[in-house]
Length: 61
Image (cartoon, rainbow, N blue to C red; front, side, top):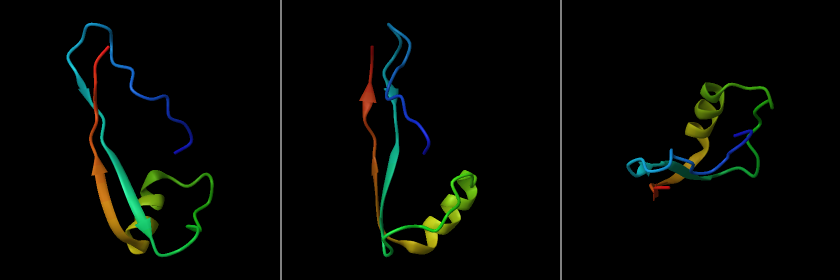
């Protein structure tokens, strides 16, 4: 991910859900070009993942 600005739902709006997938991989570094698409990253990540967890926080302004 090139950038992340954190949770920022509109003020006085219902709580928003943010989902993050955290992967444990079997290599020190994925050999993916910096300008690769998310699809290319996901494809390479799929073949090197040994575990995955989904973190789902909620945030409201």
